[in-house]
Length: 216
Image (cartoon, rainbow, N blue to C red; front, top):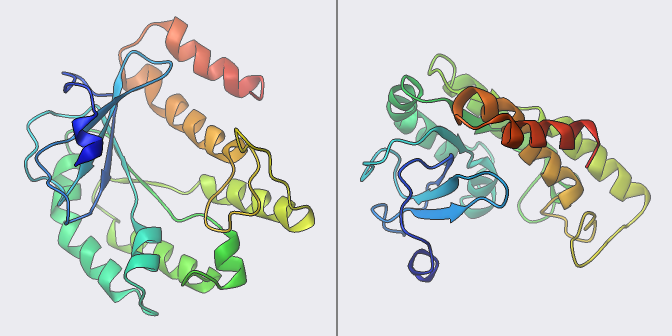
């Protein structure tokens, strides 16, 4: 509630729609967050997908595997599978009108060390379920972050690097990746949607492409 009260007024054309399925939050008040570079807003929606939505997003990016793994632990991932089955009609309807990306669960140190209710076997199981249940919905499965996260954790296993305050590296955090990787994830999104969907001039979309090429 406090986060939404601090949010700016709703933009007519949000750039990216982020959705997390937290039923404890009211779905009718999305939070629109200004982007630091692009003249668009990211809209963070909470609640069951498809309810209380009047503003059509430009692009939708979502995931929920990791939160199901830690918040609703189940060795067979039954709650997660049931949730995806229930949401398939919404995914299919949404993907018929706007690009929808579903991010698979990354390699994390906690999964490697079998802590925080995670494991590599569970990570594979959750990703396999997402691939199976979202097949044929029109949703694009986003799996290209997984090898980057594995490379990051391989590096952390060799050297425990932590670089505050920006935390490009935060190897002591077993449940999250450093921003050296997260920034690359953001670049993947910009490269996928900027020119094709966001209707921006080359000064903005070209900027993100140059950042990737320069390794920034």
